[in-house]
Length: 262
Image 1 (cartoon, rainbow, N blue to C red):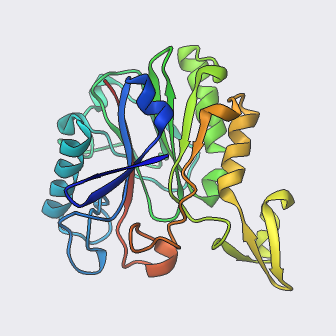
Image 2 (image 1 turned 120 degrees about the horizontal axis):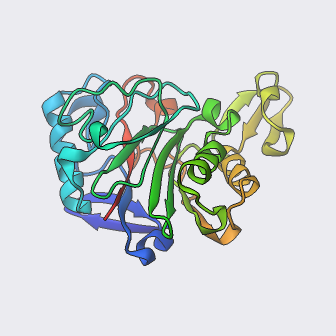
């Protein structure tokens, strides 16, 4: 994954996505926005106590930087589900240019061109998908709850079911999120995770690798290893560049993962 910097703002972009020339996309950072106070920066979350005008200006900056159609951008209310919404023309602009009724939803999918899909995170794992053959995209928010529910794998299955996509054609990008270096759990609490993704660090503490959990689920879904691009960026370690809920709790903003078919 490569960095794209402009006007003080930092984005991560997947080279395989860029090579297709089919999409505009990026994983935003916290740098270079207009939000103030404890969530200073490029906050894209409307529900974190930020000034709505500042959040809208941040979206305008992102749209300008990445070549997005701001008025058609679609947002959802994420609640750590495994629900994925198929976006239709009636949904265009929900959450940005008109009110949104897309609730309890942690994934968005469409084959519509010029419609940016956005999911938010601040340690959770953002996933972007592209089938350049069928021209289908998806954006997914995979926190540890969503990861346990295999929301990424379910997105692939939905792309197959709704658009006859071949998993071997699908590209996936795993964006910045809390890494296996920092995702600590109590040993008892971590029993919910498959043991192969858990590393014991003390008699009562473990570290969990939800990066690799998501990658493994995408491989199980039929994606080719070469088509899965992982950022390897830990939002806790890089909290000066990315929002981190584990670090700052409620005093943090949200970065976004956005993708739009051209």
